[in-house]
Image (tube, rainbow, N blue to C red; front, top):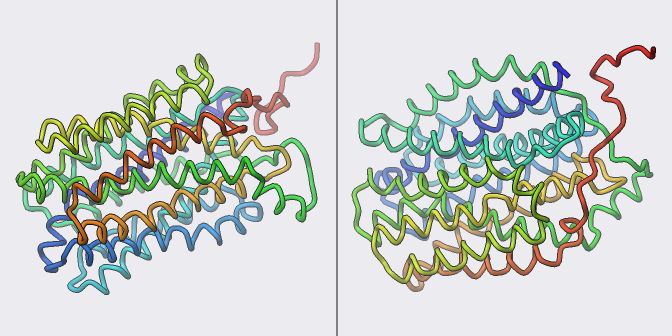
Length: 400
């Protein structure tokens, strides 16, 4: 089992790096907005470029994963993700900002699909649920990244320098570990390509995609608008404004690191609706109260409610018989990242029409949908059955 343990360490490291780099830039958003003189609506339009790049790249990742394997795709996209991030801080106009975010988002999205596909391979090899814990690693990276961003803003360190340092150190630490990753394995039932395309858009997959869309729109809104909301609507300092997403990330870490045990004890179609109800209630109260403490509690509740949604949905999609995990994860990821595509401009335009607190009122509506969707989604009601065949990457003992 040594090779599978190293593979788990490797994929966990990639999850950490993905979350760390993404979250580390969020505290700089108000500074970028002020530097370029952007309105909420224009900022939302610029932020749209990153998820558009992500969704576009997922189409290519879905095609390449069965051919090159998740290990190779992780290695390629990890280098690109670390190398292109510093370009964001070098932009001087909104068009250049959008272009840099598009390229960075393309590597971000394809890496997301590849690392989740590799996570399914490791989960099968170790024959136990691991996805929530691995997404907990992403949340740890996100929490550390958000904190690093807050400290960098306070110290006057530019976004480009911050991302260059974090990317270089992370690539040196994680890059070598990716050589220990596992080959992908097909779902239990082999089918022709025509059947694969049909099963990709089954009713269960569509509902999983819709849940991912709603959940990730809320995650994207927290990342892109938490600091803007705290600094603009609640008039906090830019340093304190970074605490909004940091609080959200900390709550996600706590729940996700407990997620494997929670999902082993409670059925997903019972646990996920209960947690999403916490998000719906807590975030709505935080918006209505309109003060810093209530807002931070609201973002914490949002993190609690969304923490296990994406890991459970990805894991359920990867277990659908006859569908390559890469295709399944790419489909659900594309739906989820489409939430990022719609979220930033939608929040920005709703804010321009009314106010940012009113625009953020969309989030508890979406978490209420997550409550309903996770209650009835058939793939989440199925008992997880991991592959019980011998792992071909591990030498088996000789028969006595």
